[in-house]
Image 1: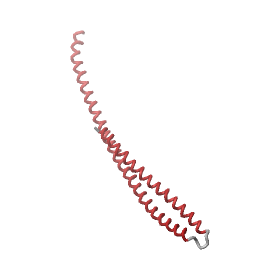
Image 2: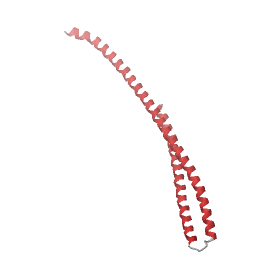
Image 3: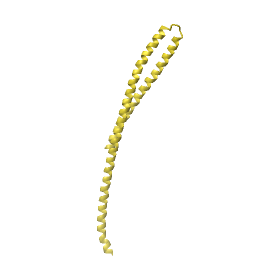
Image 4: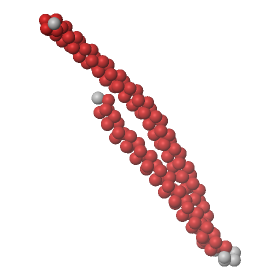
Length: 142
């Protein structure tokens, strides 16, 4: 029964790791987007600085990009916190599962040993009876 429970639990473990993978992918995507936004902002700033007095359209686009960068930074922080939460939850759940698995298997091994002791005692009793019954034959043949 315990082994069947563990097999069923593997689906939940797989799902937990899928959630972690998805959260990590979100973090990586947001970081990549931030990198792209920073690069675009730098290019626009460099292009507008070459024009004396600055290009109003480019300056406005740079400001819009900076606002987008601030929003994306906030999204990155949220995504990282969510990833860390999932990762910590997975870690604590795996530690709990490992302890439960250890306790369950220890209990199963103790049960197995107790059964083996019982079987050994039964076999010893059978051999004792056989020895008693055959001792008569040994006395007759002497």
